[in-house]
Each structure stands twice: as C-alpha cells, then as structure tokens.
Length: 121
Image 1: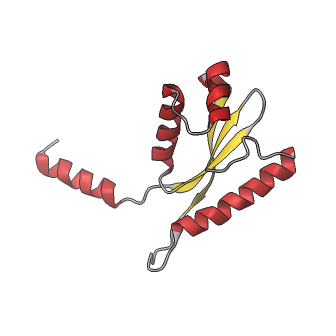
Image 2: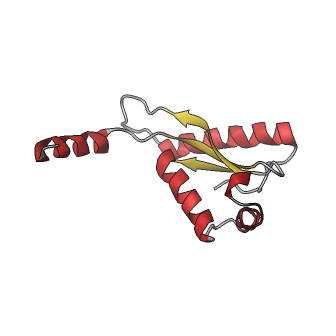
C-alpha cells in the first residue's frame, strides 16, 4: 500500500462513526450481568476484557467471578446500538445512551428479577 493510500485509509477510518450502544457482560454460570453504555462499543469491549484479564476491573464482584470461573464463563454481548442522526448539531449521545441503558435495566430486571451485578457503568 502506498503512503497516499495509507493516509486516505486512516482518514476514512477516523471519519467513520464508531458504533455506540449498550454492552452486556453476562456470567454464563450464575446469569449475573453488568450493563455498560459505550460511545465506542469495540473500544469498550476491548477495555473491559483487558481489565478483567489483568485483574484490574473496577467492579469487584465481576472481577472475583472472572478469577474463579475463568474467561469462558462470560459472554460479551451488544444488546442495542444507536445510530446518530445525519445532523449532529445538538445531538447528545450520552443522554440517548443513558435512556437506552435504563430501558435495558428495566427489561433485564423484569425478566430475571435482578439486574445482575447491580451497577450499570
């Protein structure tokens, strides 16, 4: 790939909106879940996995389960995504994600009677 092609590919990547939405880390053994809203889903998934692997996750109960059960006992699932409007003027992605997260907390609580690890991040 030529230098000009690389620059163009890099520019196109930076201008492409990152997928945003709600991520669920689900314990497949005890069914506890942690909901996370993310402006950049792929980056957030990588961050959460890295923190758990390194033993540095901020959620102590989730980290303890990860240590005890291992990585294969967890699923990382994108529950919902947001598509920003064409006109981004005045668009508040964080507020939209907060509303979407609340809907998922209600849905999971209604289905399981308990939201899981209790704190949405």
